[in-house]
Image (tube, rainbow, N blue to C red; front, side, top):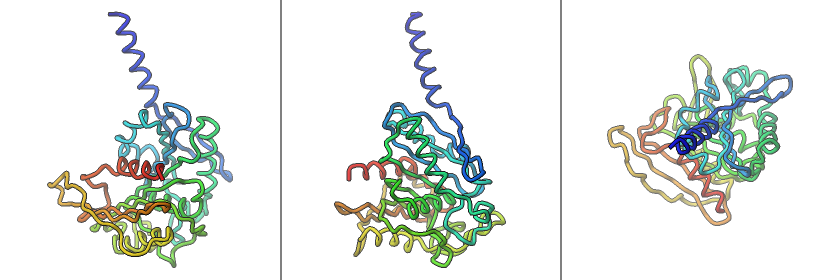
Length: 288
């Protein structure tokens, strides 16, 4: 009996050690940039950046990703929750009224340094690096896909549209990359049909519509014609929302998918878990 109790305590301790959130930092152009992460179960892990929204922080976005954390040991995922600069990202909206944008913080150096850190310290698989971003974090995910797509296998942008053409100040490499977009039609912060994005008292400038954002990535990947359409199961009929899926997918081309949340606002839909949905999307790209 004592032997079994000892083994049980070891298993509990191992689980606790795994779920412990670690914090580290890298020095980028005079700024100490912090990030939080969960150690992977084994070497050759998949690295997933989980990016908070404008005004948030890395630890704060962790609650939303709980179900992804639950499967991380089995799937051998290394989940990283970086902190924006003074709670904001310097993404691609040139009129964004944030210190990160005004000081032109070097996000590419930050993410490149983090990838190198995890390659060296934890021997991650450098060909399996992904990003999931919510709101302002979705804009940061778009920036990674626009400016350093060679480092990322795919991205998932949630409640975020690309900056409008006159509000885009990132150099575009125009390399096709798999992109999953999840947007709500009744979102007043990130307008589904485009317009100005305001968070608190800070304006982040104009964004394109969701359709224009979707077709930007689809056109970049070489798709023409109409995407395939299907309705996802309405698993929560009480929330007044349904989800339509639009997908461009052909052999040899990156998948581009839009999840259109009918009645969705600036939040996560109940019918799906956006993090598990993102991981399923990422897994499909690994078989391409």
